[in-house]
Image 1 (cartoon, rainbow, N blue to C red):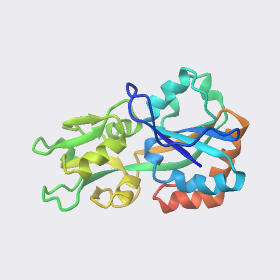
Image 2: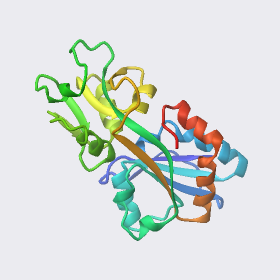
Image 3: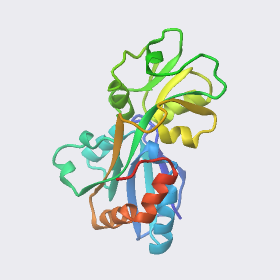
Image 4: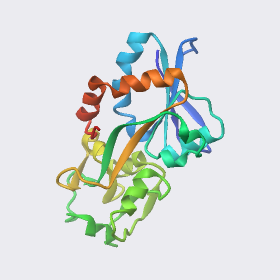
Length: 232
């Protein structure tokens, strides 16, 4: 049985939302929070085939990297910010498994006349973006416009949540967030374009390398595409 954990924030530590007893055959994965929709579908067939328990911790890539830099024992790190790892750790086997791109999203039914990136400078709108130290925040900065943000969130999931609840008028999220959340829509761009974010898989053990191979296979890549990711 899979153990699914969330790293909600550095001060909150670990919180398991579905727990099973530890098994001798177990794999530990840290994964960027923006993979929370697609990763269970990717891992299900591997878990059945190998009879190995897969424990996944989701969180902001920078927060998870800090845990690894401090010595957290894991088999595989799926990150949107490989540069957050210390240089010696980043030398572990690395591969790009998929990419994402940022979009401007608004709540369904919005009447705020929002159409493009220049609206990010409007002070009459309530705008949410990711904090600058996380990948979605770095990507938003590269849009080249002044963003009149009202809130800087610790993860793209938090921005998506604010949009879904109608707490903000406009947010910068990933294309995959819009696909998975029916209460918000994308208003820019019309087709995939960068700024893009690459998801790297960094294996620290042979078990991690084995599951990395699984995620690189054609069947897994097709699942990424189904969920709106761009594949190599």
